[in-house]
Amino acid sequence: MKILVIGTGAREHAIVRGLSADPEVDAVVAAPGNPGMALVADCRPLPAGLLDGAGVADLAAEVGADLVVVGPEAPLVAGVADVVRERGILCFGPSADAARLEGSKAFAKDVMAAADVPTARSYVCATLDEVTNALDATGAPYVVKDDGLAAGKGVVVTDDIDAAIEHAQACLDAGSSLVVEEFLDGPEVSVFCITDGTTVVPLAPAQDFKRVADDDEGPNTGGMGAYSPLEWLPEGFVDDVVRRVAQPTVHELRGRGTPFTGVLYVGLALTSRGPRVVEFNARFGDPETQVVLARLKTPLGGLLHAAARGALVDHPPLAWRPDTAVTVVVASEGYPVAPRSGDPISGLEQVTDADVLHAGTATDEAGVLVSNGGRVLSVVALGEDLAQARERAYAAVDRIELRGSHHRRDIALKAERGEVTV
Image 1: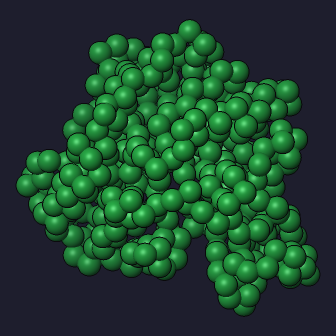
Image 2: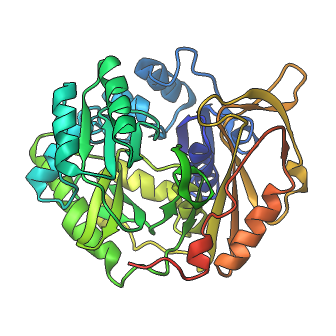
């Protein structure tokens, strides 16, 4: 197979690496890719950008792609997968209608209600009066979510009523409706479910860290690190998620005439009343993908190809490495509020016991690797246990030099200490 991967981040770099390791994959093309992906794939430009479905389909035809994998959410919501399929090319990623599960939180809540999926009590608000009434009904901590795509940063969780109202007003001023929902206590878990619209195949769970600073302080980000597996999860947890959440949701969407093909990302909170869905995403999560795919032994290309052609029911059971994986995100100065770009990155050649996946990187006119975004690198390490994986990941991070960069020092620390409980 020849596979075209669409995207620029560390998630796509992880996908490209996974596909490149599949003996059935002859070549991987990344568009537009990044300097890290260019080391293992043929990077091609997308002159009109990631949302240009015709441009993506043209490139897929030009390179003779047997499969297109769309990484980020924005092109999925924009219907890029639809255009690719209309050209007769297999695509891993949901249609625009199905991707509304991520593109609209209100739509996701409607689907969950119809499928009887356990989730937080919520209110869709279009006016400030509706917001204040909803905040009064839920009480603190207040959870206010932009209804549309916000790159993981459209959610405010706060005990400050004024901060909650300020975020709601900003959403309304931007012309967006929003969702106010009750706060869900307990640890959060991410479960990726590969589906062809009928069959659901879950991947190993992971846990990510959304706040920018240690001890979950500071604003939300796109994610500052993750680890897998989660030894503290109760037995049968993943099977329960498939039975109570993923399969009913996939069934509901098929019944609506919008079958979901791709990754159904299920974000859950393990509350005192049982698991509750925090959010759905329509693609692999970042940075969880980096640790999940690092542990997957099953060839990735064959798995995604089976999903795209509706043949998951015949796919053999997945195989996993026994290792533990930890990823730590190196972010640029000012992230997530006002990230710097253009600073030189060095020290990558000194990293030996970890993989460095590129996210916000570029090369300048002199060919020097520089930062080009908020989350710059994702350092992934494997170990026999969490302690070894964390030690290797942080030793690698410490060898990387990027002016003003920052990262969390506590990724998976509580799990290593046995302090995560359900």
